[in-house]
Image 1 (cartoon, rainbow, N blue to C red):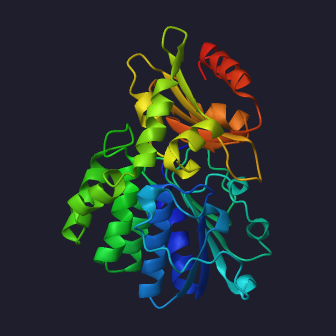
Image 2: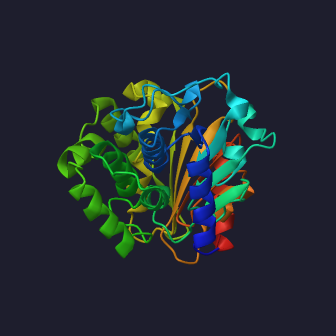
Length: 330
C-alpha cells in the first residue's frame, strides 16, 4: 500500500464541502488517534457550518482514564433520526467489521468516507483516503482541514495533538517522520499546551492501575530465547487490584520494551458479558514481523507494528499460536 493520492484527498474534501449533514465514527475500543481524529473533524465541520454528530457505542464508556479529559460529552450512542440523510465518515477504521453498530454497515446508497492510515484497510467506503505514509489518521485530518480552509483553533489543535502523540508512541515509533514533527510544531503554535496534555495522558494514573500493572509485569513470560514476551491479565487480577479493564491501556509498552523481544503480547480477560472472552494486543519490534497479519488471521487488524484481536481461545492455546507465528516470522 502507498500514500493516498491527491485525487483521493480532493474527493473527500469535495464530499465534505458539498454535504450538509454528517455522522462521524471510529473503531471499537477507540485509542488516542481514533478519538482525537473524531473530535477534530467534528470541530472542523461544525466551524464550517455543517451539521455534524459523533457516534460511539455506549459500551465504549467509560473511556480509558488517559482519554477521559477529552470533550466527548455530546456523543450519540444511538443512531440519529435523520441517519439516512447523513454522509457517514469512518475515521481510523481499517475494516468495517471493527464497527460494532450494525446500522453503520448499511450504506443504502449514501456517501461513505473512509479516512485512515492502516496498511490493511479494506477500502470499504465509496470514497477512500488511505494514506499509509501518514503517522496517524489525525495527520490526514490535519491536511483535510487545511484544504477546507478551516482555522486550526486550540480545541482542534489539542485533539489532533493527542492523536499524534499517542499514535507515534510519544514520537518514538517507526511511523514518526519529519511530517509528524512539523505537524506537532504547528499544533503547538496553534495553542496546544504540551505539558498539560502530557500530564493528562501519562501522569494522572489511579493507584488501581499501578497495582494492575505490577501484577501484569510479574506475570510476564518469555519464549524462544525471549523473542516472544507475553503477559495475561485475568479477571482475578482485576478483582485483586480493584482495577477496571480500561486500565490495561499502556501495559503492552512495558512488555514491548524487554530486550530481545520481537513480538510482545498482552492477553486480557474481557469484563463485558457480550463478545469474545479475551482481547489480545500485539506489538512487533522486528521489521520482518507484521503483527497485523497475525491479528487478521484471528479476525482483528491494525498496523505492522501494533495490532490486536478478540478471541475465545484459552491462554495456553494463544501462547502456542503466537509461538507458531513467530516460528513462521509472522
